[in-house]
Image (cartoon, rainbow, N blue to C red; front, side, top):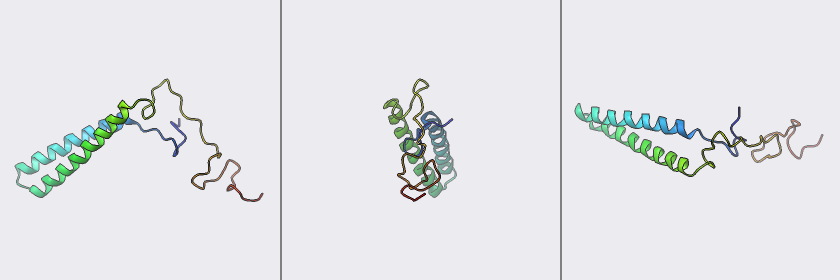
Length: 104
């Protein structure tokens, strides 16, 4: 089932992104600690940078979750109505298979 009229109003699975960001953060921290222990500062710095990216993504996801159903609709909010060719923002074809403005 579609969760929005993509790409204009796509809905993001924020809970899954939150879990993946946490998983990545844990592995990046573990990698940083492991590479520091074996004396590889370049790899430790790379893992620390990756941990910083994961923390940033996690903060953004949590912010969007707290903003409510605009970003994370619940089960009681129905999906958006599909486009059905009425919106030609991206130059895609309409429901008759022709480009808008073309002659029959």
